[in-house]
Amino acid sequence: TLADALVQTAPKIKELRFKDTKLDDAMLGTLLKAVEHRPSLKVVDFGYNSITAEGAKVLAEHLTKNGIGIESVNLAVNSIGDEGAIALANALAKNQLVTSLTLRSNKIGEDGITALSKLLESNDKIVDLNLKYNKFEKTFINFIKLQNQVARNKALLAEKEPLSIKRSKDADENKKNE
Image (tube, rainbow, N blue to C red):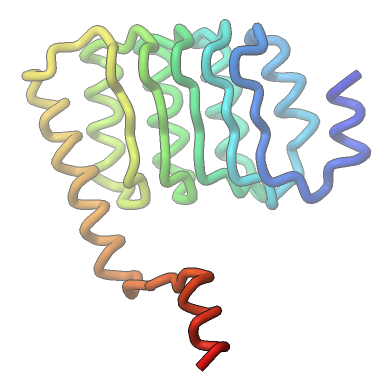
């Protein structure tokens, strides 16, 4: 199976992209078990699948294990609802590595938004949070609070990391030719 192949051949896998593959909760559990001891795994993309709150709970449990290095989680266009959002928020209170979380179009309501807002009171690592097209009002106070907390996290990150300017190949070539 694919899970067996991952266990045997992917010790340095960096990204796991299963977008729009009809992945369900059970398959997600099998897949996560196969990549359990992969600190090099930084990105998981399970968007546009059939993942429910049960799958979100499995992912949440995975994110709290030792040796997990995931920094970016995409669950866009699934059906995790409030229950799944709450499970992820609880896991991310313990996991301070995830910086990007996409939960767009997941039927998340005010309870899920409240849990995520509470999470961001103690987790300043999340700088990219996509919650578009869910079931809450954009005027809901905890959503506004959540947006402000993400902006604060971005500002904190900018203060901690010096500005890095990447040189273009053209600039390097011009320098060589001088």
